[in-house]
Length: 273
Image (cartoon, rainbow, N blue to C red; front, side, top):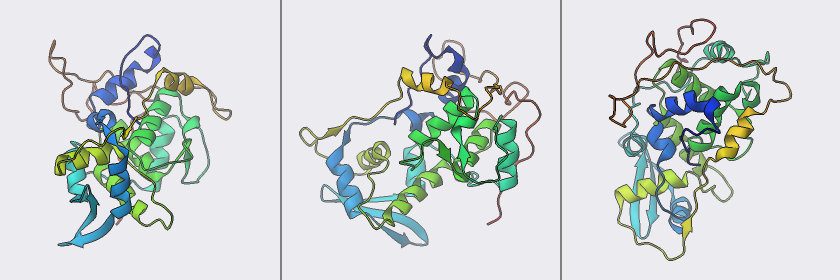
Protein backbone atom coordinates (compact mmCIF):
# COMPACT_ATOMS: atom_id res chain seq x y z
CA UNK A 1 0.00 0.00 0.00
CA UNK A 2 0.91 3.66 -0.30
CA UNK A 3 0.87 5.62 2.95
CA UNK A 4 -1.05 8.88 2.62
CA UNK A 5 0.70 11.03 5.19
CA UNK A 6 -1.61 14.02 5.17
CA UNK A 7 -2.96 16.02 8.09
CA UNK A 8 -6.74 16.38 8.09
CA UNK A 9 -9.34 17.37 10.65
CA UNK A 10 -10.53 13.77 10.71
CA UNK A 11 -7.13 12.39 11.73
CA UNK A 12 -6.19 15.11 14.24
CA UNK A 13 -5.39 12.45 16.86
CA UNK A 14 -2.70 11.07 14.54
CA UNK A 15 -0.94 14.28 13.53
CA UNK A 16 2.11 13.49 15.65
CA UNK A 17 2.75 10.12 14.02
CA UNK A 18 1.97 11.48 10.54
CA UNK A 19 4.48 14.29 11.08
CA UNK A 20 7.04 11.85 12.43
CA UNK A 21 6.78 9.55 9.41
CA UNK A 22 6.86 12.52 7.04
CA UNK A 23 10.27 13.55 8.40
CA UNK A 24 11.60 10.01 8.81
CA UNK A 25 14.16 8.19 6.68
CA UNK A 26 11.45 5.86 5.32
CA UNK A 27 9.16 8.62 4.01
CA UNK A 28 10.13 8.09 0.35
CA UNK A 29 9.61 4.33 0.52
CA UNK A 30 6.23 4.79 2.19
CA UNK A 31 4.89 7.22 -0.40
CA UNK A 32 6.61 6.58 -3.76
CA UNK A 33 3.92 5.50 -6.22
CA UNK A 34 5.05 4.85 -9.80
CA UNK A 35 2.63 3.69 -12.48
CA UNK A 36 2.68 -0.09 -12.11
CA UNK A 37 2.35 -2.45 -15.07
CA UNK A 38 1.07 -5.80 -13.88
CA UNK A 39 2.55 -7.85 -16.72
CA UNK A 40 6.07 -6.62 -15.92
CA UNK A 41 5.68 -7.52 -12.25
CA UNK A 42 4.52 -10.99 -13.30
CA UNK A 43 7.45 -11.37 -15.70
CA UNK A 44 9.87 -10.46 -12.94
CA UNK A 45 8.62 -13.05 -10.45
CA UNK A 46 8.15 -15.74 -13.11
CA UNK A 47 11.77 -15.46 -14.24
CA UNK A 48 13.50 -14.40 -10.99
CA UNK A 49 16.24 -16.53 -9.47
CA UNK A 50 18.88 -15.92 -6.83
CA UNK A 51 22.57 -15.83 -7.69
CA UNK A 52 25.72 -15.06 -5.72
CA UNK A 53 28.23 -12.88 -7.56
CA UNK A 54 31.51 -11.97 -5.85
CA UNK A 55 30.01 -13.09 -2.53
CA UNK A 56 27.04 -10.74 -3.02
CA UNK A 57 23.53 -12.18 -3.10
CA UNK A 58 21.52 -10.96 -6.08
CA UNK A 59 18.16 -11.55 -7.76
CA UNK A 60 18.31 -11.88 -11.57
CA UNK A 61 15.22 -11.70 -13.77
CA UNK A 62 14.19 -10.98 -17.35
CA UNK A 63 11.58 -8.31 -18.01
CA UNK A 64 10.55 -7.10 -21.47
CA UNK A 65 13.46 -9.14 -22.83
CA UNK A 66 15.97 -7.28 -20.68
CA UNK A 67 18.01 -8.45 -17.70
CA UNK A 68 17.30 -6.95 -14.29
CA UNK A 69 19.59 -7.40 -11.30
CA UNK A 70 18.52 -6.47 -7.77
CA UNK A 71 20.67 -6.57 -4.64
CA UNK A 72 20.40 -5.20 -1.14
CA UNK A 73 22.56 -2.25 -2.14
CA UNK A 74 20.36 -1.42 -5.14
CA UNK A 75 17.27 -1.56 -2.91
CA UNK A 76 19.06 0.86 -0.59
CA UNK A 77 19.89 3.25 -3.42
CA UNK A 78 16.52 3.17 -5.19
CA UNK A 79 14.47 3.64 -2.01
CA UNK A 80 16.76 6.36 -0.63
CA UNK A 81 17.68 4.43 2.50
CA UNK A 82 20.94 5.19 4.28
CA UNK A 83 20.98 2.06 6.39
CA UNK A 84 23.95 -0.07 5.36
CA UNK A 85 25.22 -0.20 8.94
CA UNK A 86 21.71 -0.39 10.40
CA UNK A 87 20.38 -2.85 12.94
CA UNK A 88 18.84 -6.01 11.50
CA UNK A 89 17.27 -7.48 14.63
CA UNK A 90 17.29 -6.78 18.36
CA UNK A 91 17.61 -9.34 21.09
CA UNK A 92 14.38 -10.81 22.41
CA UNK A 93 15.00 -9.12 25.77
CA UNK A 94 15.38 -5.70 24.17
CA UNK A 95 12.24 -6.22 22.09
CA UNK A 96 10.07 -7.16 25.09
CA UNK A 97 11.44 -4.31 27.22
CA UNK A 98 10.90 -1.66 24.56
CA UNK A 99 7.46 -2.84 23.47
CA UNK A 100 6.39 -2.70 27.11
CA UNK A 101 7.55 0.91 27.29
CA UNK A 102 5.44 1.61 24.22
CA UNK A 103 2.42 0.35 26.11
CA UNK A 104 2.18 -3.16 24.68
CA UNK A 105 -0.38 -4.93 26.86
CA UNK A 106 0.63 -8.57 26.85
CA UNK A 107 2.52 -10.77 29.29
CA UNK A 108 3.02 -13.51 26.70
CA UNK A 109 6.56 -14.62 25.90
CA UNK A 110 5.64 -15.52 22.32
CA UNK A 111 7.67 -13.89 19.56
CA UNK A 112 4.55 -13.06 17.57
CA UNK A 113 3.08 -9.75 18.69
CA UNK A 114 -0.43 -8.32 18.36
CA UNK A 115 -0.97 -4.90 16.78
CA UNK A 116 -4.33 -4.54 18.54
CA UNK A 117 -2.65 -4.43 21.98
CA UNK A 118 -1.16 -0.96 21.37
CA UNK A 119 -2.76 2.45 21.67
CA UNK A 120 -3.86 4.14 18.41
CA UNK A 121 -0.77 6.08 17.32
CA UNK A 122 1.61 3.18 17.99
CA UNK A 123 -0.86 0.90 16.22
CA UNK A 124 -0.87 3.18 13.17
CA UNK A 125 2.95 3.16 13.06
CA UNK A 126 3.00 -0.65 13.10
CA UNK A 127 0.14 -0.85 10.60
CA UNK A 128 1.94 1.44 8.16
CA UNK A 129 5.20 -0.52 8.28
CA UNK A 130 3.36 -3.84 7.89
CA UNK A 131 1.34 -2.73 4.86
CA UNK A 132 3.86 -0.51 3.11
CA UNK A 133 7.28 -2.06 3.78
CA UNK A 134 6.95 -5.67 4.91
CA UNK A 135 6.57 -8.82 2.80
CA UNK A 136 3.50 -10.01 4.70
CA UNK A 137 0.39 -10.95 2.75
CA UNK A 138 -1.85 -12.24 5.56
CA UNK A 139 -2.39 -12.00 9.35
CA UNK A 140 -2.25 -8.22 9.44
CA UNK A 141 -2.82 -8.01 13.19
CA UNK A 142 0.35 -9.98 13.90
CA UNK A 143 4.00 -9.12 13.49
CA UNK A 144 7.27 -10.81 14.37
CA UNK A 145 10.66 -9.79 15.71
CA UNK A 146 11.96 -8.16 12.53
CA UNK A 147 9.00 -5.74 12.35
CA UNK A 148 9.18 -5.19 16.12
CA UNK A 149 12.86 -4.29 15.73
CA UNK A 150 12.02 -1.84 12.91
CA UNK A 151 9.33 -0.11 14.99
CA UNK A 152 11.57 0.13 18.06
CA UNK A 153 14.49 1.51 16.06
CA UNK A 154 12.29 4.19 14.51
CA UNK A 155 10.84 5.08 17.91
CA UNK A 156 14.25 5.42 19.56
CA UNK A 157 16.15 7.10 16.73
CA UNK A 158 18.22 4.02 15.91
CA UNK A 159 19.14 3.15 12.32
CA UNK A 160 17.35 0.02 11.12
CA UNK A 161 18.32 -1.85 7.95
CA UNK A 162 15.08 -1.64 5.97
CA UNK A 163 16.97 -2.49 2.76
CA UNK A 164 17.84 -5.92 4.12
CA UNK A 165 14.28 -6.42 5.41
CA UNK A 166 12.89 -5.83 1.92
CA UNK A 167 15.57 -7.75 0.00
CA UNK A 168 15.38 -10.76 2.33
CA UNK A 169 11.61 -10.83 1.86
CA UNK A 170 12.14 -10.98 -1.89
CA UNK A 171 14.65 -13.81 -1.53
CA UNK A 172 12.22 -15.83 0.60
CA UNK A 173 9.58 -15.39 -2.06
CA UNK A 174 11.87 -17.19 -4.52
CA UNK A 175 11.94 -20.26 -2.29
CA UNK A 176 8.21 -20.92 -2.40
CA UNK A 177 7.14 -24.09 -4.18
CA UNK A 178 3.85 -22.65 -5.38
CA UNK A 179 3.29 -19.72 -7.76
CA UNK A 180 5.27 -16.81 -6.43
CA UNK A 181 3.36 -14.06 -4.66
CA UNK A 182 3.57 -10.85 -6.72
CA UNK A 183 5.34 -9.08 -3.90
CA UNK A 184 6.39 -5.41 -3.70
CA UNK A 185 4.83 -4.14 -6.97
CA UNK A 186 5.53 -0.48 -6.08
CA UNK A 187 9.18 -1.11 -5.35
CA UNK A 188 9.70 -3.50 -8.25
CA UNK A 189 8.30 -1.04 -10.78
CA UNK A 190 10.63 1.60 -9.40
CA UNK A 191 13.60 -0.79 -9.63
CA UNK A 192 12.68 -1.64 -13.23
CA UNK A 193 12.27 2.01 -14.20
CA UNK A 194 15.71 2.79 -12.79
CA UNK A 195 17.43 -0.05 -14.68
CA UNK A 196 15.80 -0.61 -18.05
CA UNK A 197 13.73 1.20 -20.65
CA UNK A 198 10.18 -0.13 -20.71
CA UNK A 199 7.32 0.29 -23.14
CA UNK A 200 3.91 1.11 -21.72
CA UNK A 201 1.57 -1.88 -22.15
CA UNK A 202 -1.96 -0.95 -23.13
CA UNK A 203 -4.60 -1.26 -20.40
CA UNK A 204 -2.19 -3.04 -18.06
CA UNK A 205 -1.88 -0.67 -15.12
CA UNK A 206 -2.32 -1.84 -11.55
CA UNK A 207 -4.13 0.45 -9.13
CA UNK A 208 -2.02 0.69 -6.00
CA UNK A 209 -4.09 0.52 -2.78
CA UNK A 210 -3.77 3.58 -0.56
CA UNK A 211 -4.45 4.36 3.05
CA UNK A 212 -7.74 6.24 3.34
CA UNK A 213 -9.61 8.04 6.09
CA UNK A 214 -10.99 4.67 7.12
CA UNK A 215 -7.58 3.50 8.35
CA UNK A 216 -7.61 6.11 11.12
CA UNK A 217 -11.12 5.07 12.18
CA UNK A 218 -9.94 1.48 12.39
CA UNK A 219 -6.89 2.47 14.44
CA UNK A 220 -9.16 4.14 17.01
CA UNK A 221 -11.08 0.94 17.67
CA UNK A 222 -10.14 -0.74 20.91
CA UNK A 223 -9.11 -4.39 20.68
CA UNK A 224 -11.08 -6.77 22.86
CA UNK A 225 -8.03 -7.44 25.08
CA UNK A 226 -6.75 -3.86 25.12
CA UNK A 227 -7.46 -1.68 28.16
CA UNK A 228 -7.67 1.54 26.19
CA UNK A 229 -4.79 3.19 28.07
CA UNK A 230 -2.98 5.60 25.78
CA UNK A 231 0.82 5.52 25.69
CA UNK A 232 2.23 8.84 24.57
CA UNK A 233 4.28 9.01 21.43
CA UNK A 234 6.86 11.44 20.11
CA UNK A 235 7.73 15.06 20.72
CA UNK A 236 7.01 17.26 17.68
CA UNK A 237 9.59 16.37 15.01
CA UNK A 238 12.14 18.89 13.85
CA UNK A 239 11.31 20.18 10.38
CA UNK A 240 13.13 22.30 7.82
CA UNK A 241 13.58 26.03 8.01
CA UNK A 242 10.51 28.21 8.26
CA UNK A 243 8.74 28.42 4.96
CA UNK A 244 10.95 25.81 3.34
CA UNK A 245 8.11 23.35 2.93
CA UNK A 246 10.62 20.51 3.08
CA UNK A 247 11.27 18.14 5.98
CA UNK A 248 14.79 18.01 7.32
CA UNK A 249 16.86 14.87 7.51
CA UNK A 250 15.81 12.65 10.44
CA UNK A 251 17.69 13.57 13.59
CA UNK A 252 18.85 11.33 16.45
CA UNK A 253 16.95 11.63 19.72
CA UNK A 254 17.68 14.69 21.84
CA UNK A 255 16.01 16.45 24.72
CA UNK A 256 13.40 17.70 22.25
CA UNK A 257 13.04 14.72 19.92
CA UNK A 258 13.14 11.65 22.14
CA UNK A 259 9.91 9.72 22.61
CA UNK A 260 7.70 10.93 25.43
CA UNK A 261 7.07 7.75 27.38
CA UNK A 262 6.89 6.84 31.03
CA UNK A 263 10.58 6.17 31.51
CA UNK A 264 13.82 6.32 29.56
CA UNK A 265 14.09 3.60 26.92
CA UNK A 266 16.92 1.21 27.83
CA UNK A 267 20.07 0.80 25.81
CA UNK A 268 19.20 -1.51 22.94
CA UNK A 269 21.18 -4.71 22.54
CA UNK A 270 21.95 -6.17 19.14
CA UNK A 271 21.35 -9.85 18.62
CA UNK A 272 24.39 -12.05 18.28
CA UNK A 273 25.27 -13.29 14.76
